Length: 90
Image (cartoon, rainbow, N blue to C red; front, top):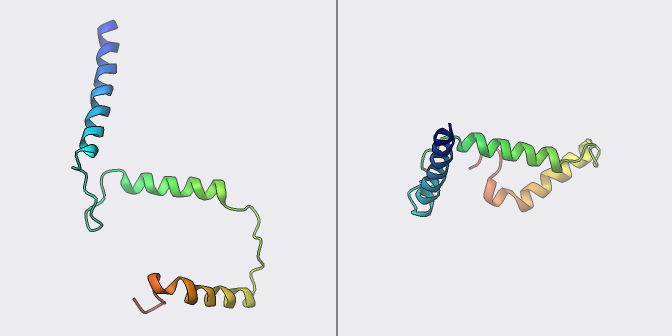
């Protein structure tokens, strides 16, 4: 039984060191056009959702009315559209 537990611990350690070496050696694909690595989408989505749950206000601090929507659209055009584009325009 003791050798079984030792084997599990050594195996987990070797797997961890192997993954660390894989990333440290620069073997992981980092180009933006590369296919996502296994679990990459899952982990990114989980991290984003947990951060939003933790940081998002529980009540809306700004009323959702037409003047605020129009002000938000103007802010987007002025500050965001340069990188993200406008609807229908890349």
